[in-house]
Image (cartoon, rainbow, N blue to C red; front, side):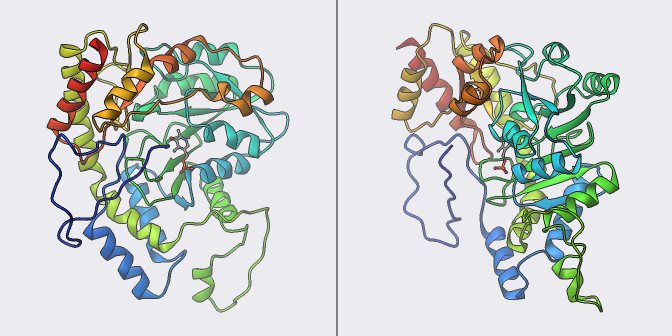
Length: 394
Ligand SMILES: *Cc1c(COP(=O)(O)O)cnc(C)c1O
């Protein structure tokens, strides 16, 4: 996991003198938090109502609006959202769910939460590190019920081929949209999608997530299961004549609180602008890397819709990755790896042995994630590219 650092605006907290640009530590991801977020949190505390109230509802409506969906359900994390989706779709023991291995482990874990079996699918190629339709077709069995798509690094998976794939086989499409907040088209590919607001995502509520689902009945089942399966929420009971409730399903405590929703409303109002900054920084990275580090390959074609969640590059096969990580680290530049493939993690090697995914393994062996977040500027990008070039010739 990346280290997360929130620097307060100087206006509120007198900060030590700014370090010289060369000395400033560049992290892979940094949240943008400041005066507006502090004011929003203060307002919630002063209001005396701290969970499941008007701000959660307002955040749900605002998020749904941005993604062109009818409504949304705020939850405690993207992982909780995925669990609720699979549970509401009644996936369970005996069912197989196709998942990429080049993803965060939560994508596969949520399948196990409901007792179903994750089936790992390779990426299309090292140049297009999204789930392969061909490998998915090859791994379908009569027990396959659903597919979880991941918009890896913030790049949209192709909606039409996947819809056709699912329709032909009677499968449910689900999106793990953790990398895709603000991405046009994300959240509308299939039955339901879950977004993440963890601290290193494109917008954050520290911890938090959002579920969108096309079918209102599915959405309401998810909303009810979020709060212990109760038929009414605390806020509705406050304003209703009968202070009672019923429980008609097995529920969970996956609620979002008012403090997080207040943060989310502020963050959402900046999301488009931040995603534009990410786009500009990515474009600069690509042109500088092509010119100065031609031996480094850049996954994804330039025109693919994206919210540029991370900046993955592929080092040349001969490069020693750990030496590059160390050289950049010495210059105050953090880098990470996205991802150690899920099927290669000890837990999955024991529980799902014998999986081999050549393209995923080749990608993960050479991948390096460079710093990318809206607090960076063009000088930071130049600094990273220069450091990478020097590390590669060393
Ligand atoms: C971050 C992430 C998650 C988990 O999100 P949480 O909100 O932390 O539960 C799931 N899938 C992917 C692809 C992620 O990057």
